[in-house]
Length: 57
Image (cartoon, rainbow, N blue to C red):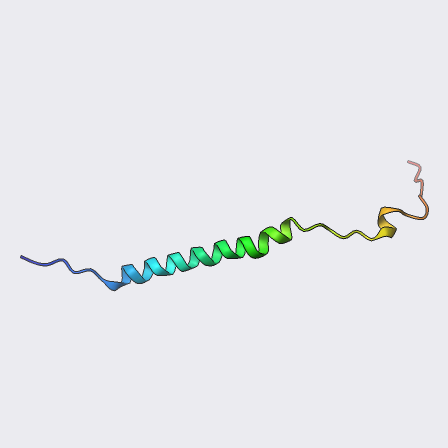
């Protein structure tokens, strides 16, 4: 009878996938979402202009 031997490559590959997923999720939560939901700061001059310009078409 032959004994089936298992390679350590599967364990290392599984650990690499788990670490990659953890890095991806933490990047998504810590950097991507806060920048996506950040409130934009619009200058007061843009919000309330001094004068308006009428352009006839």
